[in-house]
Length: 410
Image (cartoon, rainbow, N blue to C red; front, side, top):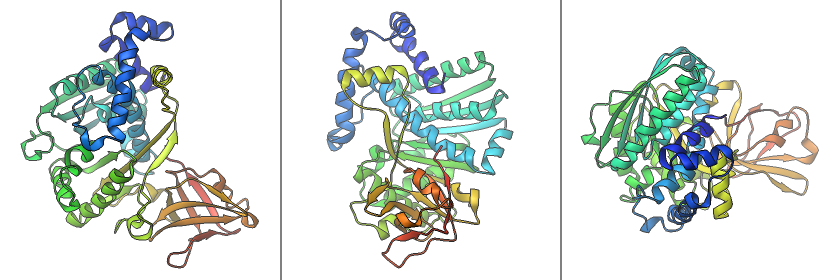
């Protein structure tokens, strides 16, 4: 059973009661429990996409609260776990995490603790049965959301302990205006500092100037990010929110010279997509996953489809490390588009150290050396040797001699 499945199985008795839990264990949860949740999912889905400007963000009342807990939380946890996988895959950071015994996470605008829960599950997998301590800081304007987060974190930690994964959980909470960073308590410094689906709600909808938004985020990073920590910004893959995040990235780097982008970018400096690509493009990743049982059941009731997840994200550090460090001897590119097949060639949008452009492989240039091109997916890192070159504004051609190495987004 995956960690996501475990959290789902713990959530049903906690929030729907023993009868629903018994139905879940036997198969499907009854429509009496799920019908109002399914309707609330459709309402939230509309608000999260088409009606964002009218949406207050106050969904911590039943049934929208339950809709978020049982449908949107698992999806966002999977996104967070994929992002965290980039740390584990790093040749140096993966070993550091596996060798440590104490960690701290600060979840800004935590909601029901999605990012903190994902971090707990990630560390349990990295530690593989070895004990560890996790100090959790939770910030949200909703007391109900924080209560749910604390409950789920404690349930998940207890389940891990019962399964032979010793973990000690310490939780500190703050109920208040998430935007009022100066009023946060002293959480100490965080190894994992999360802004998960919060920047667009708390800041970007209130200020259109990236410099003002960067000031808020950087203030929190200055106070709370540990020297060896990583700050994560996770946002919806909508055109507007993603491009706002891209502009925020540039403003953050300009305002704080000590920051570097760990991922998805392979270098600092101005956002290559903003400078090199048309306004219609936006930086985001997409991947398929296997939803836990209740999410599948809610998909059937709502006629929605959760099997493809899309999001925009950034990860910052202060030590110069990058996800692309796995092969510093090769040209690194992050794949940002789907494969497009045309007569006699294939191409994919990708972002590299110096530019964002289209990687092209002609049919006649296919070879064992560049065979990885066929398997590339949006979000992957691909390493090329020798470096791919192109004229300004032109495509980068993968030749027969080009050696490609794919590193999938975990």
